[in-house]
Image 1: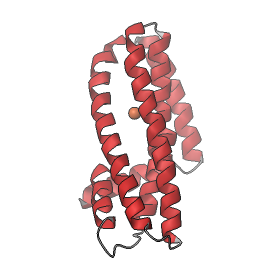
Image 2: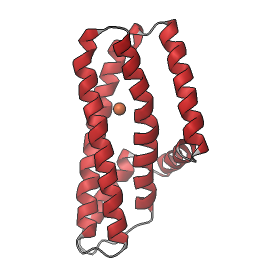
Image 3: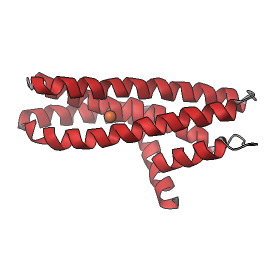
Length: 164
Ligand SMILES: [Fe+2]
């Protein structure tokens, strides 16, 4: 998804760029998969880690949660920019290109940060934590699958990855 986003941002920044259908899928992926599904799962994980009284984790969790909020705001902005651009907004392609490039850069840095964080905290979750998280994730997956959300975008992302 990061490569797709970077590539689309570069194309939309070119003179004479036009709206591409993949942008609509990409904005949906950002909102429904990244924000509504992935970040919602991590919210359960953050809560579980904090409930375990590992106070040293507060600062990194607050930082990651802040980035989730920022990413959600940016994806909402991207969706609005995309809609306006499809309706003929002058300068819309440049607006989408800039917003998408910023979103991809923040998501990329965020994912690297999370990889390091999860590598450190994975051992802190005991069997009870794992069970609680499993139940919460299952409930979330059911809710988002019913809404037609994450599974569709997982297939879309896999399809994009195989084309790359
Ligand atoms: Fe995250």
